[in-house]
Length: 460
Ligand code: UDX
Figure 1 (cartoon, protein in one colour):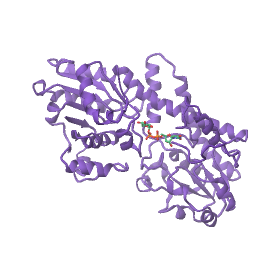
Figure 2 (figure 1 turned 90 degrees about the vertical axis):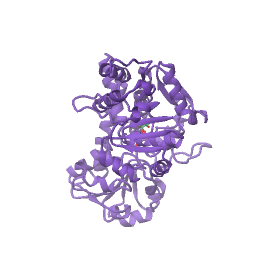
Figure 3 (figure 1 turned 135 degrees about the vertical axis):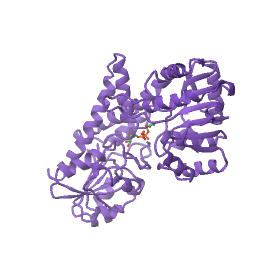
Figure 4 (figure 1 turned 180 degrees about the vertical axis):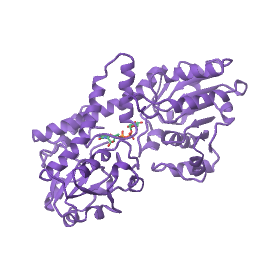
């Protein structure tokens, strides 16, 4: 099979490399000529574990080709995936579809029924009704073409998490496809055949439902995170432990253990954007998505509340104090800063008069140019960041922070204060080194050992 993937961003690159790995001939197209030049040299512009090797192997085998313009592969392709960005519009919470529509117009111009029937597939996260509007756009620009005969438009949303995207693509919980056309279904089944062999459920539904599954999936997960964050606040007031609470909740098969880790709030390029998009889509259809709106409100408020919490822990003032921050990315195993809690917390600490020394294993380099981090002193290691600081704040739960020695922390810090906004460190270990430990939702530092339940790390 032969496909084209339009968009060499996060979703497009991971999808291109993984489809190529499954033996499909992939042409990955991006209008950014410099990005394509870098990709042809084997340089992957995003931080995604394993992606560089996967892309290199498949490019070397001739199954993965990079181009900076939509060429004649479109006409020969069994499927053309639209995997371009759909940022939130500045004037509303709705998704900006200008890149999607631009790609659709370019594809429409190059369709050639004499060379076969092409399935246009939206993989980007798009509002409900986008696949249908792309179909109308193609008909408008090529009136001689007929959907269901010369081309089809289907929806196939992605569910890739940054930092584990290849795993999520190659072993997904499910593949969701939106199409009412038998040909499009056949093509998608053949494309995903290597995954289906492993027993992955492949669900077919109409296009609007497939588009909505994506938005609601992310919004529901975001709601779980905002819920446990709110319960963390309650745990602190009633001397309970949010980690045990989450474990107890998660043992109910109907709830499940994942996405119940309390923290400083969710970030990333998807949860905030998709929750906003879902609220916008609901509003357009006269529905008031109150739970999703509350999810967003709780999350936004939480990031601000975290800065206040740090001030409270330091006797009500951080003015003139040096605060060491470990981790600025929105989660570990990525260099992505989009909507990260650090973008709110660090500027607020600086505005309160603190000086901030920060270290992040992946983001320190590109973080230096971020306006929100103006004035931050960037350290090359966790130890350097902590040296002579009046407090330590853990913002992202990178594995390397979990193994930091409590004794070294106590020796490096000027004041023995640790604010662990990801519950990544062991309270007892730090307290035995004489440090004051402040976690999230850990009103009770010595949680009663749960009977027979592994007290290992929380699932994600
Ligand atoms: C998410 C969805 O998981 C993925 O399916 C979709 O395709 C893209 O958006 P991603 O944004 O990469 O993936 O990150 P994810 O691992 O979902 O975490 C999102 C945010 O929630 C992060 O800021 C993370 O720190 C936070 N989070 C997650 C929590 O605070 N607690 C949790 O228990 C889980």
